[in-house]
Every structure is written in structure tokens, then in C-alpha cells.
Length: 187
Image (cartoon, rainbow, N blue to C red; front, side, top):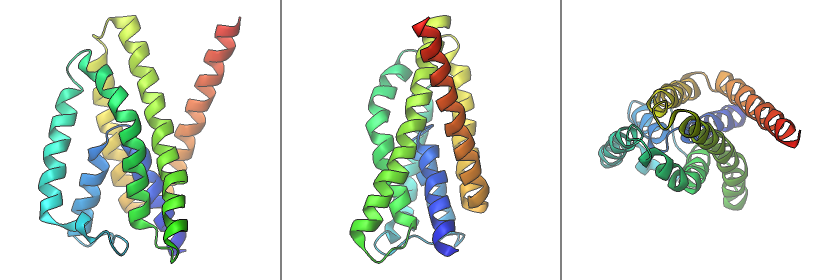
């Protein structure tokens, strides 16, 4: 059961990195510092004050930058690979498996894959918003992404199984949207 909860926590935090890269790590840091969750061996740095100040600074800059039109689109190109890395790191840091190869492999496939899929979906939404509104609708989308990142991260920390269900629903919704778009484009 503990393994399932740690995987659900990792997936929830990883999916949140698809919305904002540093928010889930910051909230995981706060949760570690308060003893609500415990990182795996070798990831104790996640619960330090140094990590807190670094992640807080990065979070403030990232959130602010997403409110600048067209800079947000540029950030999406950088965020795509970084969200995979952050998702991998967050999943790996909470899944305790004796084999490091299996631990990192699971982190990369499950955490990095989930983060990458969510990031791809948000990038496509932002591109669509930029195309249809000339970038004027992007701050609204950024606000929704901020709320989603904070909300899903909090859900993953306090109710990881529910977060896993939410992530599954989100990925199912994204997959259906992409399928509809491809069908529409083929016609």
C-alpha cells in the first residue's frame, strides 16, 4: 500500500509540473519540511531551507513570466523538456524501491511521461489561445494553469489516490481532445 501511495504522490506531483515546473517541487518542499511527506533516501535536500528559497524564487519568476504575452509561448518550448526532468525527479524522490535502476526507470517512464503529456497539452492550449486571441487570452489560461498546479500538487500531497484518479481523468480528456482535433483536421 505504501508503494501505491508513493507512486500516486509522484504521479500527481509530476502531472503538476506539466502546468508549472517549480510549484509542485515547492509544495513538496514545504510538505517535507512540515513532516507531511518523506522523500526517499538521497533526496533529503528536498526538505531544506536552501531548497525552499531556491524553489520559491524560481516559482515567483516562472509564474510572473507566464503573464507576459508571447514570452509564455517561448517558455513553453523550454518547459517541455524541463517538466519531464522535474516530473522524473519528483516521482523518483518519493518512490522507495531498493533497485536504483528500477526507481529511476519508473520515475522517468511514469513521472517524466506524465509531466511531458500534461505539458504538451498545455502548450497546445496556449498555442490555440495565442492563435485565436492574439495572446490576449493567455493570462486567463495562465491563471487556470497556476490554480491547476497548486491544486493538483496539494491533492497529491494530502490525497494521493484521488490525485491519481484526477491525473488519469486529465490524460483521458487530453487524449480525447487530440483525437477529435486529428479527426477534424483530416476532414
